[in-house]
Length: 302
Image (cartoon, rainbow, N blue to C red; front, side, top):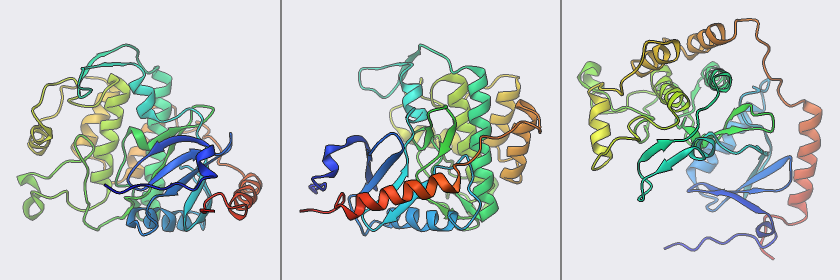
């Protein structure tokens, strides 16, 4: 078992989350830092490189802002309302083993479902515009700021459109069936199909308060994999939300841009103003603050 060592000065801050790529600490009400536990991690390198690409373009308000990247860490905008996963989990009663949801104790308000779904679609369409798919769209990677606007985060699985998708566990990805011909048995190529499948599952979470199949009893994930490969999806209703879920699961949007436009027009109207991105002046100020933290030895071992 590998022992993870954290710089002493960093341990003085609140730990928000930990994962294979890095541990995230809250620095203050504006800044969080993802400290990489493995500087040679391919996922961390991919994320840092992609934020370098994002910085060359007009910022997307629905994608988390990175203020500064250094070899040991990535300084990001702090999201004070946590993740969508945490929001949903707060209203679930789970089985003793924690695997199944036995009861949903509170629903996501419809206005937030519409807002969060539209913001997620906007973010995915922006990545598509740049030629990329996120590759890991799921509630833990969807963060909420102080005004409860959704931000797409965690880019360690970012993949160029048209290259083989590494997939994900169900219900965020689907192994293709016979309908895919030579691609059957794989996740296929990264693109609108793979991204909208995950987005459809997120919308299902928002409307039900739990993941697809999460209230069912399965012996293992292989059963869910098989059901999805057969295109045997959870039962849906005849309403606008479920119509979009079904179309996403069946890959019927040729472009994520089309999905984003439909969400915008269906739920808000095309003239709905978007949440503005952080200003360049604000980001520059936060970048200087982050650089000062680095210079003061935040991420080094004494």
